[in-house]
Amino acid sequence: LNDFLSLLATTVGLYLIPFCKRAVLLIVMMSIFGISYGTLDTGGNVLILTLWGDKGAPHMQALHFSFALGAFLAPILAKLALGTTVSAENHTEPDLHHPALNRSPEADPDLLFAAPDDLNLLWAYASIGTYIFVVSVFLFALFFKKTSKHEKSAASAQESRRAKHHKALLCLLFLFFFFYVGAEITYGSYIFSFATTHVGLEESEAAGLNSIFWGTSAACRGLAIFFAACLQPGTMIVLSNIGSVVSCLFLVLFDKSPLCVWIGSSVYGASMATTFPSGISWLEQYTTISGKSAAFFVIGGALGEMAIPAVIGILQGQYPDLPVVLHTCLGSAVFTAVLFPVMYKLATLPLDRQQKENKEQGPESFAL
Image (cartoon, rainbow, N blue to C red; front, side, top):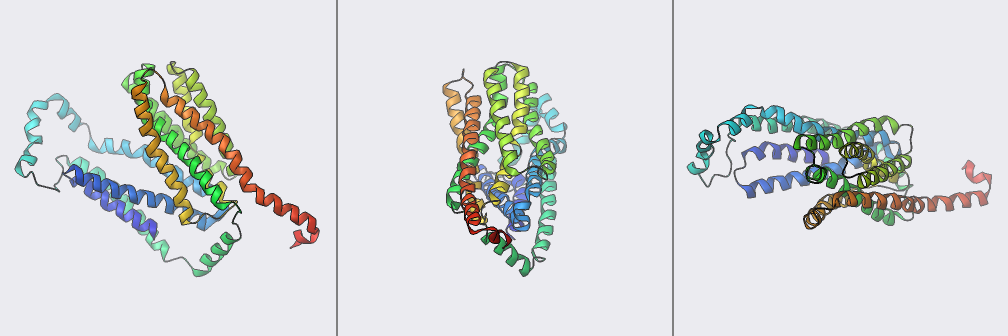
């Protein structure tokens, strides 16, 4: 039900955003949009854990693959929907169209909602909003198909799998996602400016560098759906951490080489792809992840997404000659690579004690 309401709020926001004529109103609508997205992100993860538990690693990878695929395709589809006529008009004859753009605000300066001048913009938002509304209807229909027996069995299964250090694991995963998501968004946000100012690439090449980072991330998330069926989530996290550290170190050492930046960006994007869904699936193997628990470490990722790029923007302005972005990503990769073994030891410690107790009790305990 939470996912349905979140998607419904997202649909309303997408329909209203093109009509906003005031910056304050647009900020409010985007804030509501962000809240609904955060709720949907948390609810989707919890829904998969409720349905499949610790067996839902492929499904978790599929969920986050859909996020990456949508983030990769939506700007392309929006660009196609906007067409080339608007940009051609704005760049070829700016003086002729300048009065037309200022006509509606002069007519009614107090207007809050109005149809956009470019109807293609309206159709771009409306088409995505309609698609989300159709998905929300399916989720609403699935809500009524849940049975009480399934809920009781899922609840009992979760109660029998609560680690002794449950709260400590959640706090460590909070930090893990804080640095992981923060580094991912930081690199994706600043790689364009870094490539143009520090490496010396053209804007078109820098845009392609950004695309290959997110494109390899989306492609590897799609492949991870199949890898998750034969690899443990912990193994995928270790491989991702190794790839992130190696690619970031490669970028730091050869930050002036365009070819090395291209190679490092593609490997870094691929290495970052599976960490978040694998982290959730890994923790589910050892302890219960309820809605509150999922919201807690999702907030950690959201805070990293907000704080780290802001801090890096300030530092990069103060030290323009240094590749602050690359050093930050390398530091975050090393931190997460060191933190995960600590998390693993903390998660398996109660299991090791339980196995020792079973061995002391004899073979009858294993029969039980």
